[in-house]
Length: 428
Ligand SMILES: [Zn+2]
Ligand SMILES: [Zn+2]
Image 1 (cartoon, rainbow, N blue to C red):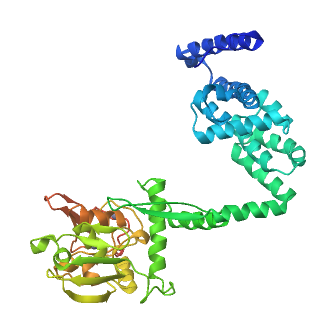
Image 2 (tube, rainbow, N blue to C red):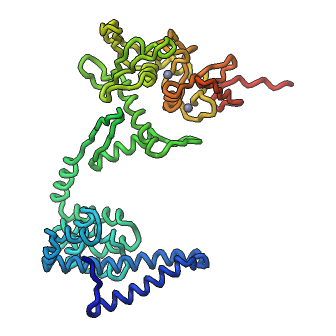
């Protein structure tokens, strides 16, 4: 299907360019770049990008020519986009952008843009953004916009170009801008897709105002801390979860049927009692996500604001809608005063703001909900304490250690950073 361009001046030029590029590739792959100065490497990047841009203008001209002729049908393609996809091996959306850009450049609607790309002054990415906006811009607007847009494109990335285009077109046609804003707003949405393994795929699209609110809140709720090993994505999810927990715990949260909206965990008595009772139980069921492991169920039951429905082995409801506020805010404050504002697990530096309340001796094993039996491990360590087989122990001097069920012990840390200890009085 592919044949060489071997006819006429275009063919000769492609041949010469190929020879030049081949020489460049051979030289760089031969290791010649090792002797090139840092500044020259930057120049090389700029020059090769410019060459790519100029080649893009040639490629787009080819797409345009086939589009105008309609000759894509001779390859069995139903559109110029399908034809471009066939030969350029790009995604459908890239092919669509390619054809749109080729049409705009070929139409003469944006002559300065076509010249700048052909001169290698701006990139294909810039031109795609400009072409998309030109297609939607009112007649005559492009001539007004183009010089300033190109000035930005020579200096900045395509996002900056898109911002300038949007401001211009919005100002030129406020009604169209409003309609476009409404259309973007209508596309908003969030999808919560429960997956077979119990996790949930959360995805969505936000209009610009909502996006700004959501991003600001998640950013504020997910600051990195010293020694933070979480990825940015993990921090954002922790931040979002923190926002949601606070919302559900807030006294003015909207009422759901029957009272406060709550995460509901259903688990049987054996699961609640845990492995200490001789059997771990079959696990629990959590609202929205379904079955969870026994240790996960006990971790959820360990923290506050859970409504539990206790069902015995015979399926009888023994306690219906028992409202258990496990640790009160006052108890949490007392624990922070005692243990400091950091996770008590040795060598962890996470702030208590993202902590769960934990029963040192499990609630299901008779551990009381008291400050003496409580601690505030970070959510990650709380997970390790329940699902990971570790237990947390406070020593008489107030420092903590963790012990795995196989006997391994970590801690106590010699000088826990958050731990509050009275300063000895200096001797006179
Ligand atoms: Zn716990
Ligand atoms: Zn921790």
